[in-house]
Length: 639
Image (cartoon, rainbow, N blue to C red; front, side, top):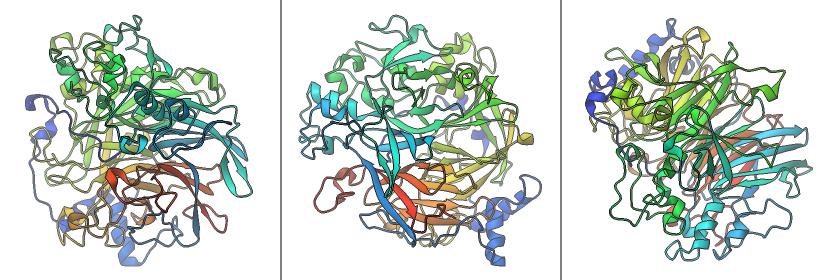
């Protein structure tokens, strides 16, 4: 997700409602002490030594990763995508490129109408998935998170009209299109029968326990089940039954009202809803986003949306059973028990980390029967525990079910629907751990462990409800970390887990000691900040994408532009694989079925007026782009 988006628009409730994690005292831990503590993880806590412990042994014994066969690249400040020797980069699609036959080409003037954008690839590419059709044909579903109004419009968003708002709405959502393999590589097929744009105005259905509740009803939808659109689609997930999961994140930015008498309810304040609408100005031209006229409309956003990429006529489904918050991604796996398990991060400072377990079980022989697995199940929120002085520990999944753990009418929850609509309040009520912006989750292909990026948190140790400790070990966390957990007995439906930190990002060139230098698998050659995107390939390589500070000075000196790194979970080694262009975030990851083409998103190059002209070069307008990385010898990426 974009670093510039708000992540402290709202705060948690009172300190008295915080979890036991608030009892952990802030403590200074040296880098040496951190590593000594992590070394203890080799005794039974996980399968083998922890990655950080193993990285120390690898360094002393001269052992190198068997997973990673490329030569790491140095940090870059170039206005280009940089990859290792023996690799090459090409463009698949950029903002404004047509995805339909006969659609208008990109117009850099900023004067193109809304009707043109409705037929083109949306802005600010983010999470993505590839769905194979055959060996040489596939469908891609790609999120278009938000718009850069200074690039979208010739007036830079300063003189908005109704058509401008519609144009921006058409630049949001999801782009679905076919690609075909040619002699030159994969290319967009504009004549593809499955091509589709899903925007902020596409009809959708609310499903699950909250559907039809009074808090979801509006003047235009008395049923509380029919909603228009999806927007601020950050990361994603996919299901083994062939559907795409797109996640609604910072939906609060799109609402407002000119009615000075309107008071935002406390429940909506927790999600950052405010009367001011300065950023996108949709409420000024589309009354659906006017809080005074449609006070329940915000409740209809902030969900995970399930889309069938193989049926362009299908209606997207907002799955309320997975809770409402600022969703980052939805990492779905099938547990050995047959239940679908979805891990979910709420990307805001001091918010929480969730798990959904389906009521039904997956049937590999009957895909159609699986289509409603996300309709019903149990939602949980994580509580991390750590002994004094330890940066590893155990954790519990706290059930968010009406009547349990204090989720009762006496505490403001009248039914399960209200728990799901106000998930953040429910998480606070049960005592969940506040986290350093939990973002992407990735489950190892062997299903034994999973990881989540904790991007950064300037409030850690400074707000009463965000104490230092456990998986959030630093005051004013500038650099971020990746937490890893292993469920008890390998059962992802279990209520308990064990955790450690796979990596603590830092800058050892600036900080010679302490946690801001990073864990021992961070060096001057691979350092980075703000891990965000995350994904495993089938061989178990962990791909880490960043959305952080790219000033290349002061606390971030030597880090260069945002980047993608590759990690080996077994040895703990991390190598820089790719560097993005100026002022861009590297986000979104997919592979061709043979893993010989990597698709990577380059979001908001040149944001805030920075001097980028990617991908066109010269004096061209910068455009978010999906690039393809291949090996010159045709081999598997990363191997």
